[in-house]
Length: 476
Image 1 (cartoon, rainbow, N blue to C red):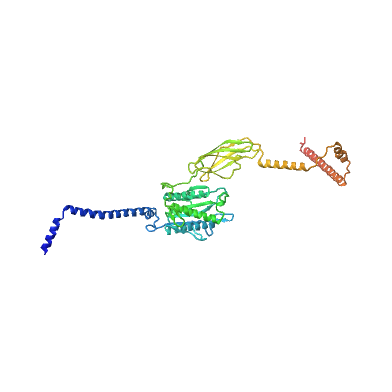
Image 2 (image 1 turned 90 degrees about the vertical axis):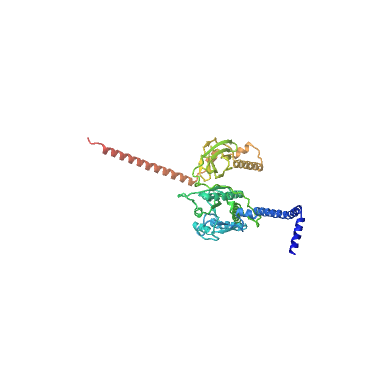
């Protein structure tokens, strides 16, 4: 039986041609090849999905599954007995906590970020405690919130302070660029991004110094000046302080490339300013502007307007403000914004009072509030009438016209004029009163008495001199 089976198989095998076997193999390949292609295509789609979705999140550092969330610490400046700046009814420690709470609430609407506050009430913490707390939660960044004051209540605008050292400078400057741009869009004047060193050559501000010691990037945000009318409209209401907090949060979201389904925004493709890591200490500018010169381009003697062209430059920190004087520097205007920080030359028009000989000077200020005085230009005085003088003259003219309309015209007759005129003789015939007579007598008596006393004194003085001369004569 076994032999029969083998024989049958051999017979079948011999009867199957080579071409038949080849055809069967081709059919099988045709069936399984599309499945293989589908599998490869599915892998490519999956790979593409990872690049656009989860893969992109992992690349940017915001994948909740693959990477830990970003950790930031918000530090509301001051607290407790440390009131911070005080101006009118505003206290800095109370303002910074409002901004910080609004910032935290807004940031927590984004995915992939954890937010902490150094204080959530009126606690008093020293700067090292704040940074130590940030280190304990493995913070990636510290944002220190403040408001500003100036010694003479003249400065205005927003500024950011960063570390002067290494990667902390690079990261701090990159974030501060986002923050300052947004504050400018709000309408505030930018005072720039700066560093400051103490006498030991380390960071001046303690919060930045202690954060740098713990290798945590830190930016100190001075939102605006409390003591300047230019900035007051930006903070004079609680809702406006909350606007600052939401703006700060958006700047953080842009810097870290966050997205929020709640807010419907995605900053994952936001391009930060690239800042190279410096190999040296980025010291502040301690020198005045390099040049400041002026030229008068027009003088209107009828209106008192003088147009001045200013050329000034600071090659380290740029130009920030200017002031002008028309009395040779005795009095200066308030600080004025530099019109275009990308240009060194601009023109402005000032009003010179009438009957004043203008002696014009301009001070140009750099990014660190140091100034250089320009050359002085003298001009001839301008004798013109001011708007107030013209208005007063017109009012007087109208008053005279209205009076003349109400007066009834009188015929000019010589008889009437001669009758109403008082002659000097009539005034002389008036009787003199007794009081007037007594007053004259008393005055005359006093004059006579004074003259008598004077003569007596003179005579006595003369006699004394004669006696002295006689005594001094030598005896022969």
